[in-house]
Image (cartoon, rainbow, N blue to C red; front, side):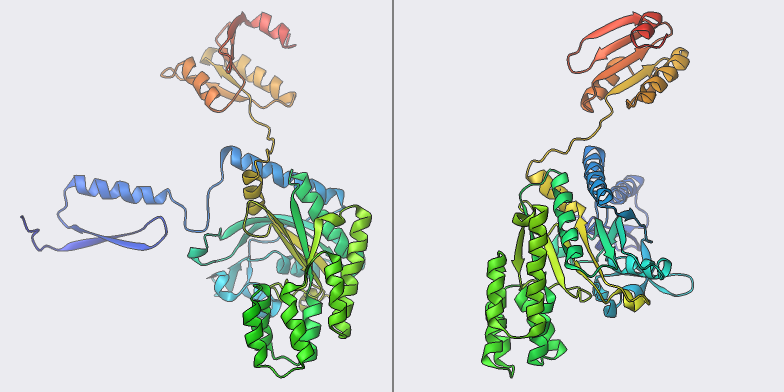
Length: 464
């Protein structure tokens, strides 16, 4: 067996598909064939995206755009106006005091002045900043909606996208239960507009839990641990943590029951008998008023309740909600009231809002086999160089009528049959082939064709 001689080596560094660093060692005197192989392998790596992001193209992209347009139409019908904020902001916008994502979940980088910048992990704090900057003296309610990307640096084993498209709405300056109900009604109407029918919006109230915590005198660390256990419906974990706390037996029993307090509004009303805490009771009153208003919208059946739902975003101050459906393991929508967030930017005003995670919605629509109709390009105008003027005029005629058309000059090395095959592959309906004096119309699906002189075809199409 031949031994490879000991020679100097050079290292070529590149990243594999999952962005883990690999090193390939090559002899300095490698032949061209070896270098070519490595070069091809490295070129293939350039085609892959980093972990947590993906390309969306062709019909999938068209469906996503169509779904987003339907949701934006609902926002418009409710009187909301669009707002855009930068993709990245100063780190302080999202720091812990704002109750946004954890610092380890953020994509951070520096500008030339050494400021720490962050790709936005959440849309709400930037909109709060924007409102405080441009609408400081506004007294009436503001209705704003948005569509944009968010970025969360999640763990690789979770299999989630790190870049997601979110669309949502914010109602600024309204602290009423009617405002809460309007948000939930918009969520329901927006999801129904996409074709989704089987889904549920789950409502919670963080004030119910905070009232109990305040009464028990629980410290912040214990409160955080208990919140996570309750959110995960970990009954035994809650029981174990409470054994270490000094509080009344009745208080312990309420915390133990929290993971079980979910269902319709009648189940939530049972919580009244479990506590006399005024803050917690006001929270239940609020949920009952929201249910009453949603019933007047005719949307009450889409709603259920869960007093054990506690968001990781600490800026929420009242009602919170999430929407779920089958076909995806995570929520489609998240939202809630955040009355104390804008004051951190200098404007003391209440607010409530939500975000629809479009990528999860698209996954659910696909798995439920709900068809999203999209407008496709259905015809090609293929022409010889000598027929360019007429081909351009024909394309302009179709476009003026609102019909999409691809205009292609036929190169000499490709046949008309090649383009008919191309049209069939892309599910187009018609191909028109123009030579200097004739038009040949190919019906792509049936394979039928008809040739006419230009004058005859022009009269048929109303282009005399």
